[in-house]
Image 1: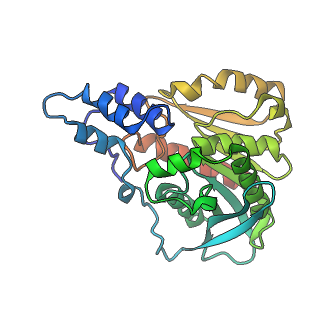
Image 2 (image 1 turned 180 degrees about the vertical axis):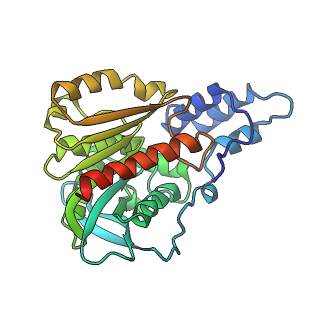
Length: 297
């Protein structure tokens, strides 16, 4: 897939998109700011179409791929919303049990990009499960704006408990070998960190992509190895990293951290202009290698 960046996008636009994607500014303000950057030959619509998601661009593994089979499964979440549901993708070649990976979406529900990430994992031999935090409200609504609003309206603690329930469900699944990894993006990166700290006897490996750290008081509970992925231009998340790294070192956590030069928050998401093909593919190859090392051994 080619890097979706047909025009030269000023860094300010990426920074504003980050604010917009995280609910700090609304769509109208975001578009108004883009209007200040338009020059000869570049319109607001060109800028916005390069930054806003186009999920037709993001499918790397078709849901019809013969190497995988996908379904939806519900799980109990007594401390969360009562019931959760996720997208389960299984390698068709799997006989018996296999390593399992929980895939955690961004702050807008289980969109097509994250479902594709689950398929990519199954394509290389993992059983992947991607819960939808929006399931109690009917599930991902089909667009990110509405999904973001829905997720923001929900009880944050209940959402976190839903993902803890999903982790336990997947660890104990009939197809699980008993080795569980977690990978997440943005909000999902935070959840990956949080799960490693909150469920140290459940999580065997965690890969947070540009995620904020868990609460300081539980960092010392982390037992699983971590592979942390950052974009160099992601000022908001990177500002939290020095203190987090200090705590990881103080608690002798096994971790690796990579900062990918010249890329933004969301660089792995191939549905927007923030996507960087080279960095995304390198980060993903490291993710797969990490999971193979810690989950297939």
